[in-house]
Length: 533
Image 1: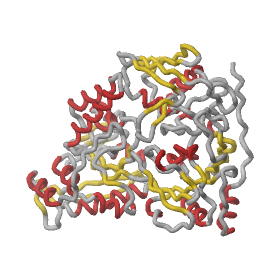
Image 2: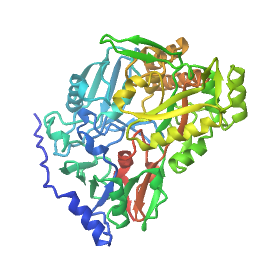
Image 3: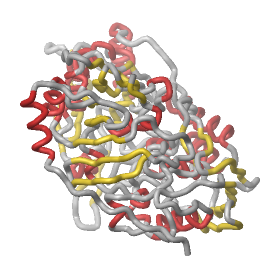
């Protein structure tokens, strides 16, 4: 057994005192690489565990723990703890050769034993990790100290994506409870202090095989966004995540960085006519929508709305118009087209039998061209997007009502209403969740629009069953081509993540990977490359 001692938690200092001192003093601190920096990246990093086994930091880049592979700025996969890998002809066996000479934070050696342990721990407790899917993994075996072989029960090309999302933990030093706050890994940063819901202090790993970070310590603070802005203005913070509506604030000594993401906001539009069914517990579930099931309505919205105006009105002009998944994904297949074609939208509707009423709203067979768009309760940005879309739709003669519901309520309401969804991930299996006919359950977030097409199903299966990434990517692109003309999703914006950054801090924008879904934590994807000028 390897001798792997666990790090002890540091003694917490009340964040409130730190914040008060920063705001009241009125004089900013001067950061140095030895003293470190302080950042606000939102509260999501404090919401759950830091344990990779439980799905923490599954963004495709190293933080406290490295994975077998990682994502490059070009959205490709490259080796991280693995030097290379191969996939069998039947796509059921994945063999990874590991890098040698790597150590965990506690000084113990990284070997194949740790990989096998980590994957089995997730497999045996899959319910604790929603971000890594090992359901098709049949076995993991260390064939020697630096070779791991995975056997799958069926072909699953997205298994490679999972290897970039699962950070490896030490087999002999792992403790499920302790790792929630003080994980031990091989990554560039090690946690030296965790104060629940207040702050996390990480220190540079001086033995990091990927290059020792220049900045030696980073304090990640948790606070309200208004407080973060105030502390930024007083010079107490070096990086501050901000909502787009704050991005034009003047903060002396800082500049704004609007960073590229793969995060897209789109509205799911049910493609079937309204029907209903009764669940086993007697609940009536409505599925489908008699307005959005008309392709002419969906297409009119797609070509008729002015996306840039919507972005200007809802997101302070920050973000890029989207007609599909982002082009910065290797499997993305966006087709650019001109929107704001209101006359053509009207022609489509009228050709489909819609007649404009005295109130300017189209009608057909006595029914108004009206439906509802929902967004999650508390998500101001999505609500503002929905409201801006509704204003644009009104100019097309389509009435859209806007409302908010809890996630539990959305899980059923999404089957019969438009919903503002946010998707942004490296794993193309999201396309299966959105378009594969068997994904629809009537209660959840997969294929809520009830999309069904035999050709698309075949392409999805072809992509999943592929034994090489190139063929899988080709099939995923064809899925998008095959679904594009159905206008099942109204793509609105490829959002950008906004941060105030101190003028003397370089966050290496050129090596930032496109941020996945979730504003905040993704900015630290290359924190080991940050430098102070």
